[in-house]
Image (cartoon, rainbow, N blue to C red; front, side, top):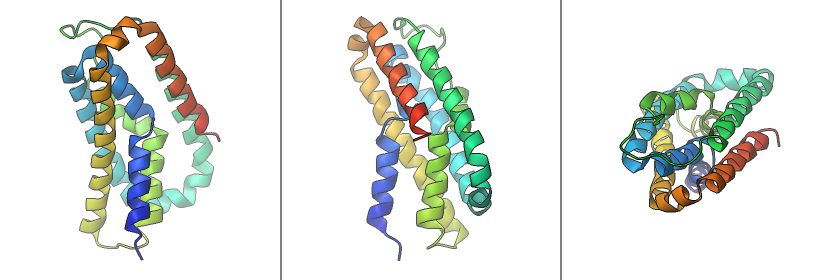
Length: 194
């Protein structure tokens, strides 16, 4: 029997806890303003949707191959997250929201999903543990994939609102904020191996 409460608890906890999407969304919003970060978040939504569909379509195959791929995926994902931490730490103070210097783009939000182990594992775990054992209808499974993407998007958008709300504070203490964000990203990378 499909356990709705466990499924919802898992997807909301996973979508709203710190991870590369949420931390980068908050960082971009604090740095460039909410309006500029929306494009990055729409990229997250697009990439998330594609990844959830791929996880849905190939979940059974990936689960069989996952033990061999998991170490490689973890190293690549952790390396990318460490790179984001380094860029965040070195990014300096916030910029005027009217400038385009380094502003996040749709493509960068979308591309992040293809190397974000949290997104991939979120999709595989949700599909293999909660959805595929109970639902066989392609439209229903696809609807779940899109629901997963939408919930993930709302999580990153909430973090973007937080970044925009505290923009002045982030601007005043940019070095400290960047250091905290970098440490949070490093924690995300390290937690992949725990």
